[in-house]
Length: 153
Ligand code: ATP
Ligand code: MG
Picture 1 (tube, protein in one colour):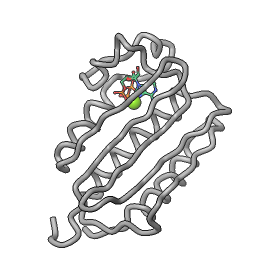
Picture 2 (cartoon, protein in one colour):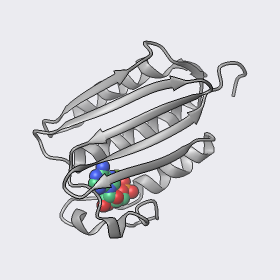
Picture 3 (tube, protein in one colour):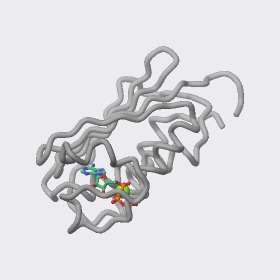
Picture 4 (tube, helix red, strand yellow):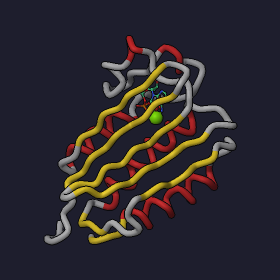
């Protein structure tokens, strides 16, 4: 369906705001007030929901989480930035693997499935996902989707 990614993400963050027990501040920053595109809404929702849930789960109460959305030409770029525990270098090449969990996450609950599914869904949408992270500084996940503004999917 054709929908506005910015408005949709905003309402999704409100949903997350209600369920999160931690006190982080979540900011949504967009250079475009509206980004309309034909995307699979279910996949898009799952991807954002999972990445923001990770950002919440792997950072302390007093930290900030920033979501940036930007349209450029035929693509949309989304960044999910947290100031959490970070991902150890030695685990970085494995975190998209099913059931893989980094060493520093062992006392935080999880199954290690979220990112594997997020990556599959992103690729199903013709997109890519990457990240950068420094231990104890935080992590930033980058996703890019091709924007289909004309034909229906
Ligand atoms: P779940 O299946 O419930 O999502 P999970 O969060 O452990 O469990 P993934 O979301 O797949 O699994 O993430 C895999 C691993 O990558 C995590 O266990 C954690 O070690 C690391 N990780 C993912 N996101 C972050 C983040 N934002 N900050 C730090 N580590 C992260
Ligand atoms: Mg997860």
